[in-house]
Amino acid sequence: MSSNDPAVVTCALTGVLTNPARFPVPVTPEEMADAAEQAWNAGATVLHCHYRNQEPGMGFMPSWEPDVVASIDAAIRDRVPQMIINMSTGVVGDDISGPVACLERIRPEVAAMNAGSLNYLKVKRDGTWAWPPLLFDNTVDKIERFLEVMDKLNVVPECECFDTGIVRSIAMLQQRGLLKAPVHVSFVMGVASGMPAKASWLPLLVDELNENVHWQTIAIGRDEVWEVHSKTAELGGHLRTGLEDTFYLPNGEKATSNGQLIEAIVAGAREVGREIATVDQARGILGVEGSRAA
Figure 1: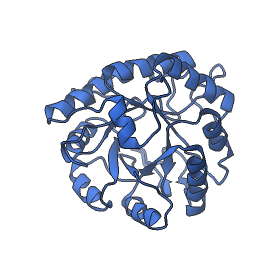
Figure 2 (figure 1 turned 90 degrees about the horizontal axis):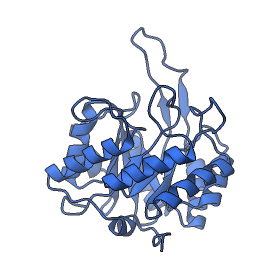
Figure 3 (figure 1 turned 90 degrees about the vertical axis):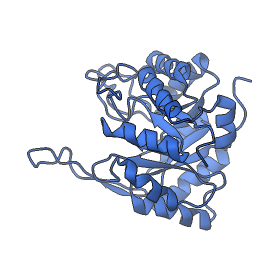
């Protein structure tokens, strides 16, 4: 990858637990389709999708009900059939039956594959835990089971790495033959107990990857994320933003839609001389099958 290659732009539409009563995150099939169309019009070709409980008042909770996931997926594909779907699979614990059932039901082109474990922590200003300390457990056995399902369904894994040791383990997964080319890695930056959202870290992280590994950054936070995005574009990485990752535009104003954030990341990439991948280019880079719109 180099700065001469086009950048694949992903929109992370909604996230896991953000309360739609307080923040402008999409929940319903219609809202998800609207957000997807905004992202497409702004330059995104990939959608990273979490799926929410559709019961009244429960939209802040995730859903692994295949019917719910299928209804949202169908609404998105009806509105923007060209776009590439990247389905979240993140679950705590050993039971992966929910994500697997959803993978089998909608067969997304890409799926997130959490590549290692992390103590998921945050402390409030008063010194108390923001939530009870949580182990986001992604054992090698769990990773292998996810990869086996993804391989069977022709779903391309996107390896999410929350810490430096997880980044370094990607080469070992390749060495073991668990990851097939092309390999895609995401540096998740900004989680309080993971890698910080610091642009200065990027050259060091990229240096830990094998040759010909594609990478992007997932920058979580406020003002600091935009420096990370700019450096990512300069170094040849792919780009992601959306209301899952930040609520703030480069000027510090709050974003009211996913489309605004995609417009900002596309503009920033072009400012440093980076072209944005078309959907056909994105499919080639990611190694996914031809458009389902065909």
